[in-house]
Length: 329
Image (cartoon, rainbow, N blue to C red):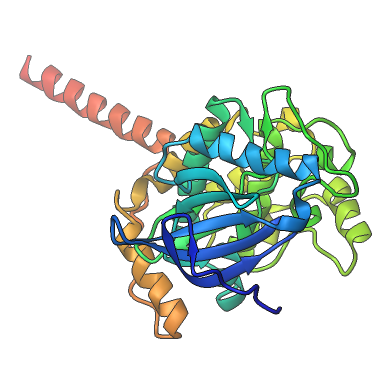
């Protein structure tokens, strides 16, 4: 891909490099001299100014990001028009996209997948409670910074409450990560994001996409019909985590988890045996992936007793206490 010619400055920022180009414009890595920090500027292409739908999409992303203030969502800094171009300055995430990580290490230890899933579910809870639906969850829209924090980005096709924009000739969302209702052209809800995230979770755990084939037609057919079974997961994936991901991938929205918050609560229970803070171990693991080094020791996942076991223990203690009391009397 031929990079766009770099301007010397965009607004008050010094341009360093073009780090991405898409249908809407370029993404520039810039330096803010006033605060001595790096940031990213998304700039809409000059040739697209006449396309009102694309301008609305760009404005939509600004509107959504401006309403967000969460550690697992990319932060917006500014928005302005310059020489007829729309510019959006955002947080620079020093890390890799989940797509890059999957391409480098296709299967993740369950604790790594849980840690990333935890961060993105937190981002979705924040998003959904503000009446936004992302609609385009995929590994390339998730970043993991080198400090071990997962972040959600690219809100350009988000739905706000009952408002929606449609760009002629485009598909809203990425086909391989669509929910069944998106494939059928139905309205999307929070449950659609949950399904898409379920695909990503399965891909992290199993090292393969659960539905993707060599054509979009076969892929979407699988999304509509192929079921995921416990045996589809590697042996080291806990049964409770398999159940959660399978519930996220239920074909009918009504059969999925009620909300991102419900998924987060269930994941919290699954992760109860892990250390509270996983950003440092995740950072170390990601560094090993990047540099193709041996993996560090995994955090110890202490197995918690199931509720029935605790009930049995409590009953046993009660019986012993009762026998002691009888003996004393």
